[in-house]
View 1 (cartoon, helix red, strand yellow):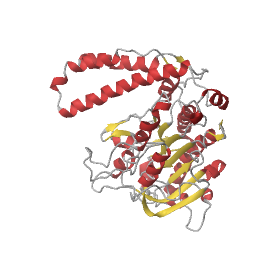
View 2: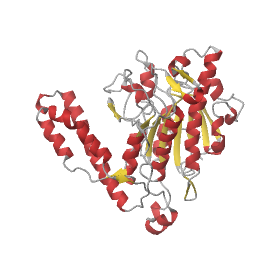
View 3: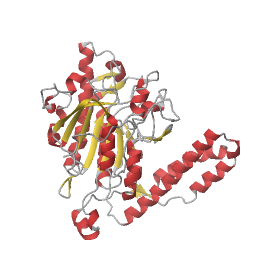
View 4: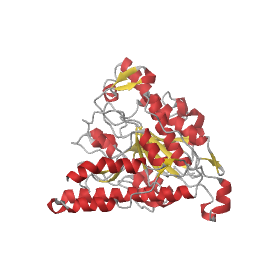
Length: 430
């Protein structure tokens, strides 16, 4: 036990710190035409899910039943530059288990929409999330299986793990998100010779005390060893990848203080580079954690407030105004990522055209904790398969899982159902 405790951080530093500063060039049509087989000459489809906590102020997000001009809504106005490549979806709802914490459900179950009555080992309706079901299908295409990003600057960890992660390998098995831009940089652009003996060392350590573990802890140890093996495979895939791709210097993020906007923009830029360089085709991105007691400093908005606290006082005009500013701020940062993707030419379109990027929240209304009429935006046409530049009005209480099922199928997953879905989302495709 002492051996594991003392050496853990040294090994971790080695895995993240080895190698030089490199970046792959983006998808090149000439290279694809000359070197790729026919079925690979078109750019691959990318998937990303952005999460904004605690819903949005409805009357600034959703247009009236008669209006089709969703870009005129105050919160959605930052999307105007890419408005013809965006779809607003209304009428979606999700599972809500009464009697357990609603916010824990919102984030941790957002991408699973699992059946709460299924025999799952969690008090929440958790299961393997959509991003990992998709990664199961497409990870062979890229050196990095999936990328989990989180713009949570809070140092106090008094809140639960469920509020801080939307990506899960399965019930109670979190895909821990990355919060430090420098760590993201190192994972994406630094490669080195993997320590082939690291898994053997972990196994050797484990054998010293494994016999004393109960069934639950043995399962956790197996999960840890599986994760170590995945890191080794990822490093090896990156090494092979960079042997056949040109390299270019990319400045590593420094340690200078950043504003809230600068921090999220930098993380968004990392995501764009990962998609542009074909380093991964699957990503999740938390703009902020779900309910967090500590006030957040919104530098660009010139105030420090608890987002959760604002949602429960939005009946006050002054508070509602600040909350709308927060909503607009996050949509603006999301729009900047879309604009970057749309500025990168790729094949017959842009990187955004060859992507499927969703922005949503686990709550429809943060004040009353409703899980119907969820705020959902889908950007990108998924290689021309999604009809964009419109509002898709679904019948009231259409399962959110219908959208997830459709997206899983578009990414190549052969799923008949997903969670509580009743079928693929009608009207989504062109």
